[in-house]
Length: 242
Length: 302
Image 1: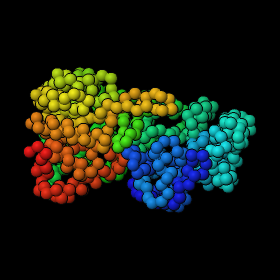
Image 2 (image 1 turned 180 degrees about the vertical axis):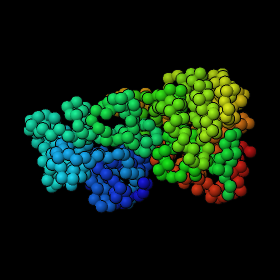
Image 3 (image 1 turned 120 degrees about the horizontal axis):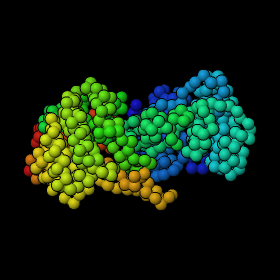
Image 4 (image 1 turned 45 degrees about the vertical axis):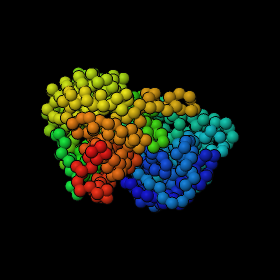
């Protein structure tokens, strides 16, 4: 779907991190782990941004300013934005009694809606969230309000456990073996190595976002090419070369 | 207003054709609109064997455009015949097969493989892809090599052959004339321009393949200039490509001497851009006083 979404709010919530709420019919079709491709006036390519929350007609996008496009986006406080989506496959909702959600930095937002969906299914949800430093902390209150077991780690020890998410998991002896993850590549590589069951969501530069241009492909362990936008962004653990 | 146009092998109900590499084999965009609305489709390049394409980052944005270094990723001509052409038979639109290769022999082998596929109405010889090490650009930047591959393609092809030219040359007219002399049925101008970007965090080239092909509205003035120069020197039709985003852009290309156009990177921003342009084109032609599409072609020098 291609439509204009109305900006409800676009606020700074942590260092370089913004929460954008959009009113759009796309919300009714969206699933946890999907993304939308947002046109930012003045920029040629759309920006693929993951969906953090789906509430009736409201989509919440939590994004980090990493370049000129997102820097321009943060200053658009009202009006409409052209939205293409929802795109990608999203996370599967499987019958798992216990799920371990692992998010790193700006990879955490799509896992919020996913946690909600798994709680709704009756799964017991544990969330491990890692950040570089406390100024980049997001979604702590929101996850707590959901009633999940929440663990937080920071690389510099400025908040929560001092270390990375896997060290935290060892430290607290979290033994769940079905994982759902999103975050930086080194984190996903480590998860891919340690766990056998679960899914992770990848990020990639994209042009079309719909599977036509082959700009965002990654290589599968079977040697085949997979489009992050269309075949992903969510892949089973072990599927692709990270 | 009737905006249909007949070119060798192609009966286009309108002059709008999504450009090769920017539209896959139509499947993804068929989710957004009826592909039968299109004049034609230039499908993703076919090589003889499967190609993964280039490693690393393949896409970079730049002001008014983008760079790509996909590297002719495709599943090979056999898989395309088996898996993609049957789908395209469902639509009433003219299919142009973009043919690529790492050697003259490979181009010819791909043409032979596709020669008896009825759904393909014409070939587009891609001697201008900047993202492969062999073939591609090398053949398209030397007049004698462009002549040789076009002549051989024409000899074995059962369908009209259009040659897609590279703008990365000193004199595009010289290459165009060589292709015409080799009996090309038409020309497609232009492929992408060679460019690059640097990642400031590393100080290194941003794209995995170091360089990429520049496309988007930033190349439109260059494409127009080349169409204008070539159209005055050849007697075969030209399909114009480069940064087209609107019916006004199409009219500029027609005025410059193109008989039809291909729309590339604009599909990425707006999957509905082609049907929008098709709907707008009669109104725009009318606005500027044209009674037919033909009247607009080559107006700039006639």
